[in-house]
Image (cartoon, rainbow, N blue to C red; front, side):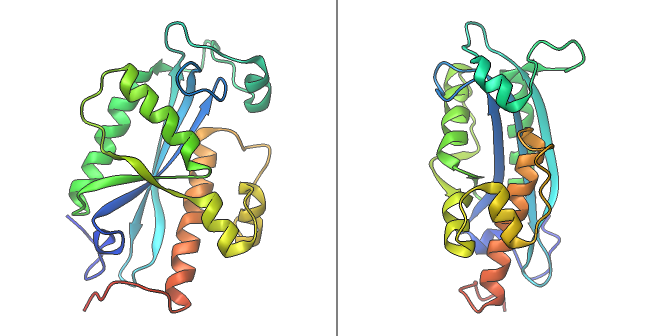
Length: 211
């Protein structure tokens, strides 16, 4: 049940529920390289029609059988895929749990489908879609090819396309020592997305008529 009074997120994005996704991976090739972490930040709309981050779902993921993992990627993210305390789960289980949470939010917010939001969203979408195909998942809540890219949006809004620099321009705290974990990057990207949408509304940009 939507709890935002007359303002509904489903009206703002043509029935789509924006869900901010971040993946940390073993490389750049979605078809061959492992997903090591995946996170999804859920946003909600308040009575004034402003967005904020509601909660984040985060999973450490076991590399799929035969997955490629580049040492350079591990050096960049600081992830040890085989650390005994990592509590990683198979990617099929991680996506099932994540998609279950997204579908629940779609129902509660009266939306028709989710749309992926990401910083350089084609990267995250590529890995999610490759994993969906690899795991033969039939019920993917996300639009198959459309997404919102905060790198593009922040280039327009702040003149910056790097996540840390865009957050700095938006006044969002960003700790480089925490970056490159899926949960942290998803939450900062979600804050950035909310800030862009909210500033657009407050500057007189288009919003649906909630009256």
